[in-house]
Figure 1 (cartoon, rainbow, N blue to C red):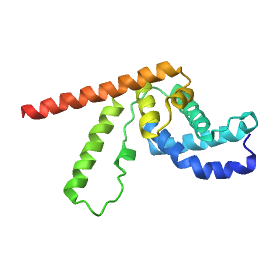
Figure 2 (figure 1 turned 135 degrees about the vertical axis):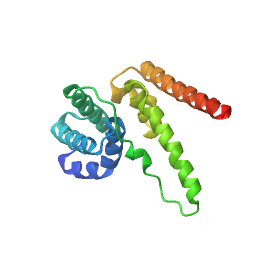
Figure 3 (figure 1 turned 90 degrees about the horizontal axis):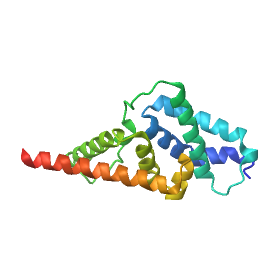
Figure 4 (figure 1 turned 60 degrees about the vertical axis):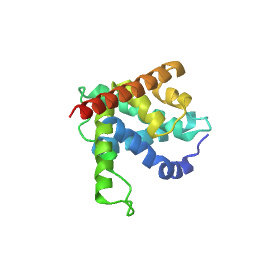
Length: 173
């Protein structure tokens, strides 16, 4: 059981990860910040009921539920900003051309990910960007392990097909 006194340390430890997760789901800095606050508010309210040993998957589940609640309240919209994916680490060893190519690759990948169906996108983000195990990802999304694996497989397959299509198009020109 998490004690209320440790909520501050849990916040300091996991807030950046929760923020990046929510930012990648909703595509908006302001909405992600609001959802982070909602996530930790809900975590504070339900600390007595929490008995699991792994805090991060539990927080991501709370964050996911806050995100789903937000989506239910507003009309369906497509993520319009992808600034999170533009944050590249500074690397003085590489020249501007290399950085430009990396930025273009990130932009293209972000575009492809944002076009995935919502459930596939969430499975991909949890497994590949946040390195959750399949079981943890399934628990966060509230689905079965086999359904999570199917969503992840289809998302990766779709990204592979999109990349292959673009490579073929580039070869033509």
